[in-house]
Amino acid sequence: MLREMVREFAQNEVKPIAKQIDKSGEFPSESVKKMGDLGLMGIPWPEAYGGTGMDLRALVIAIEEIGKVCCSTAATMMAHTSLGTGGIYYFGSEEQKKKYMPELASGRMIGAFGLTEPNAGSDAGNTQTTATLDGNEFVINGQKVFCTNAGYAGLITFTAQYIENGENKGIGAFFVESGTNGLKLSPPEKKMGWKASDTRSIYFEDMRIPKENIIGSPESGFKQFLNTLTSGRITIGALSIGTAMGGYEAALNYSCERSAFGKQISKFQGVSFKLADMATRIEASKHLVYHAAYLKDKGESVIKEAAMAKLFSSESAMQITTDAIQLHGGYGYIHEYDVERFFRDAKILEIGEGTSEIQRIIISREILKSLQKSA
Ligand SMILES: Cc1cc2nc3c(=O)[nH]c(=O)nc-3n(C[C@H](O)[C@H](O)[C@H](O)COP(=O)(O)OP(=O)(O)OC[C@H]3O[C@@H](n4cnc5c(N)ncnc54)[C@H](O)[C@@H]3O)c2cc1C
Image 1 (cartoon, rainbow, N blue to C red):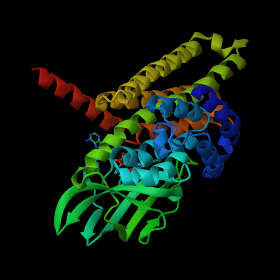
Image 2 (spheres, helix red, strand yellow):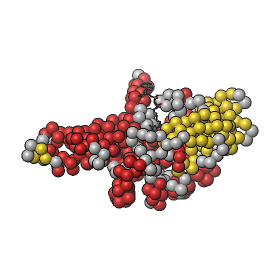
Image 3 (cartoon, helix red, strand yellow):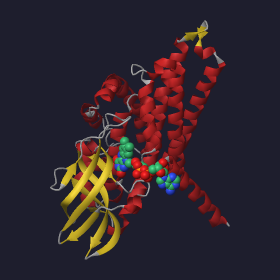
Image 4 (cartoon, helix red, strand yellow):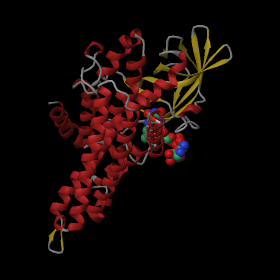
């Protein structure tokens, strides 16, 4: 039922404007509002907190369906949910959840998540932003880069080194409401893909936030953010499936319409084998992503499974959208055809929330760890 509802929304409301907002870079505010009305901005959170009361698998389904037609819109909802809201839901105090969850889960407030810094991307532990305790407030100084949704967010969660009485207590997680003095944003980045998704740098200049704006225990903020990223990787897997399907379905249709040498190009084995590989990679991605989401919903640790799902499905999305262009021939290179948009949108999936290289590091570390345990 959820898939049908989201598909109808995506096909009727999102698809018609996807090409236009890719061209203009306009943030999909209207679609975000409609997603909020449909309960799609708070899918995995309990109804008691204003959410839809479903689970991660449901979120995967929704991201996949929206991603099939517009990756920018899906990325906006995905980053808001798994990253922008996840930190508050999983690690926030009851008071913080009561205050912010209904706003976030309804989409009335958009969430963003600032981990990456100019010198702390893959090496996220190299966070330079500082949060210095001064009486009942933290004074924040530093910079975050590439923050999705930042320009439209009502609430931004971020990491910073927690300094108390001159002592560095480790990396903590904090949040700030938009409009706070000392919080500055860059203009939106101009990107290869995800063009209608909002990406900005954030500057904290002697920004003061109440002492209560810390999430979870002071010293475990970094661990919490890494945990949030684990769920986030499953949702990147979902968007990878959607992106891949967008490219694949266009290529499948085109190969049944286009003729060369007197027959449909799909009848050439060289073309049909490509279609077979594309379909197989999508199916395999689904198995990995849905399995990781299922385990996460059961409360199991999914560090390895989430990394595998993200790695395989994002690299598959890149391969499939590349092949989709190839099957369109020269037309695939022209803006009028949707496949070039899916191709541009696919690349970030291999980079955001941990590059493919970082996923391979995580997977190999987990494999070797279990080997050492059993030795
Ligand atoms: C559109 C977009 C949206 C984003 N949204 C967000 C967001 O909302 N919040 C947020 O916090 N961040 C966000 N990011 C940042 C993204 O997560 C980082 O760009 C990514 O983690 C990589 O970090 P980096 O760019 O600093 O690359 P680097 O870490 O500098 O990596 C450069 C290259 O070196 C490789 N490399 C680095 N270390 C190793 C290693 N140990 N072994 C092998 N290879 C290595 C990397 O794989 C990569 O190929 C976004 C980025 C983009 C482009």
